[in-house]
Length: 171
Image 1 (cartoon, rainbow, N blue to C red):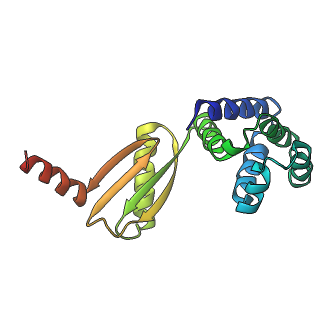
Image 2 (image 1 turned 90 degrees about the vertical axis):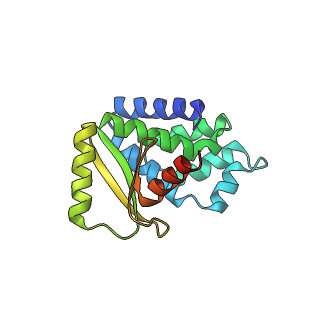
Image 3 (image 1 turned 90 degrees about the horizontal axis):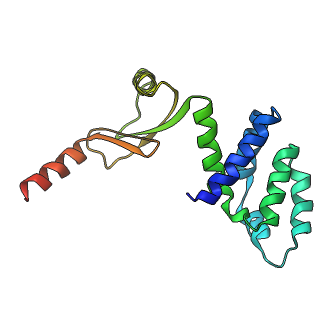
């Protein structure tokens, strides 16, 4: 991620918080990004499409004034290509402010609801946050779990243990 994306995300967050429309902006940002397909992205990035034409299209698809003006600023500054990075930074700032965190657990088979709940509770207690946990099935894992959150990796898989053992034995 870039510092520029962080600056834009921070500005959007501060403005939405000040105007008390943080949840609406966060929701519209996520919806907008998920609806953004290759054709729309190409349109927004195309140099022969004028900034006013881009703004006219965005006016019809955005409902929150702050988010619309934010997109206009990105267009005016030729930063619309940073939209995904800005969304990532915005989500990180929002999660930190609301004491939430997202984590991904990789396992060889789907985890039960009890196992997921126990992991959420454990990670949440350790970091004093509410955890949203995504279970990703990775058939390459022989056994164990790998948990990733906020740039940290907790790898308790047999694959990791075997790779570590191999590294130790080959020294």
